[in-house]
Amino acid sequence: MRNHEPRASSSCAACKLLKRRCTPSCIFAPYFRSDEPKKFAKVHKVFGASNVSKILNEVPEEQRDETVNSLAYEAEARLRDPVYGCIGAIALLQRRMVELQVDLAIARARLARYSASSPPILNDHGSMIPTLAELPACGHVPSQEFRFV
Ligand SMILES: [Zn+2]
Image 1: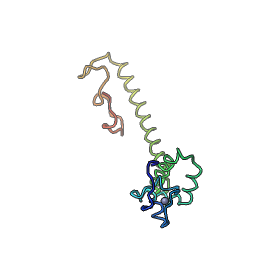
Image 2: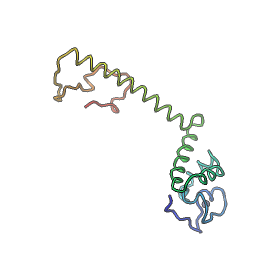
Image 3: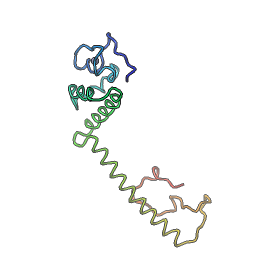
Image 4: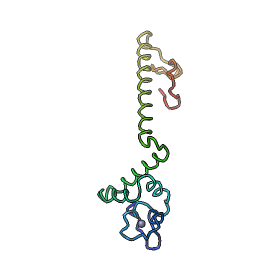
């Protein structure tokens, strides 16, 4: 939020929470607007204001916006899942990816067997590719997320 100019009359969310005066050179002001108090509260709870300040000072100004987004995301994940934080979300997605790769391999093998054992026949849609309903069930893949045609 580099377009946000801190005003003398209103403290940024960080200074409000820390109960200190917000100065024009406040490192938090461009990234923690006063109308988003929860964003700083979460980042402060997980990382601590002093560490956030140190991190922002170490990062070039043009990358601070993204840094704050990343800190806010990580803080949110850590508060939601105190044990694993972001790693929990990554592990879950990796597990789902492996499951989908297995399902895809099974579907490809069945498709290969299907097309090898019978001459190409057009389905109701005029396509040689069978619809999901024509294929044997693929375990736990939710049909709404996984469509052929
Ligand atoms: Zn401030």
